[in-house]
Image (cartoon, rainbow, N blue to C red):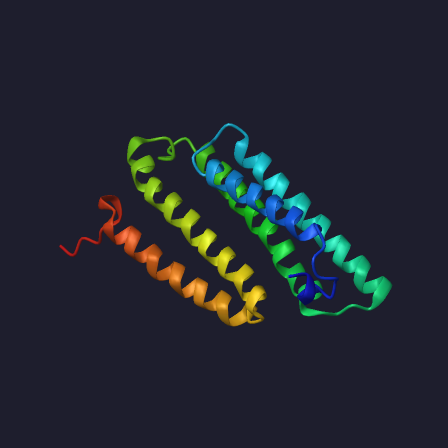
Length: 169
């Protein structure tokens, strides 16, 4: 990853960022089933790390002219993740606030459970493929493979779930 950013290889920042991203992933998995402010805290953490990383990369671009793909393209993801999460969180809160909302019903929980697990698995698969892509020097190709693999596994998980089976009658 450091090499793709144009930074020296072997810096401890890589391990630190690995643990920071692992923490965000764990928070995301836990947040799926929580409605007590935990989701908001998780989104705030993702937003701060994403915005902070983008600021660091932009400062590096301005100071050194470093336009390496890992120093430029990564900023799209750094800003897109919190933007999407904030949008999803707002939509979720609006849905929960409606008087006729089915969000807190057992039927909804039965429907949502497999989706949360499948989405967590898909996210982990894509993130792992992204990291491996940089490791092998083929981030686009290997990430695309991770996306396709996670999509297939997501479909399999949902088709095997009783609450998501397609009924043809």
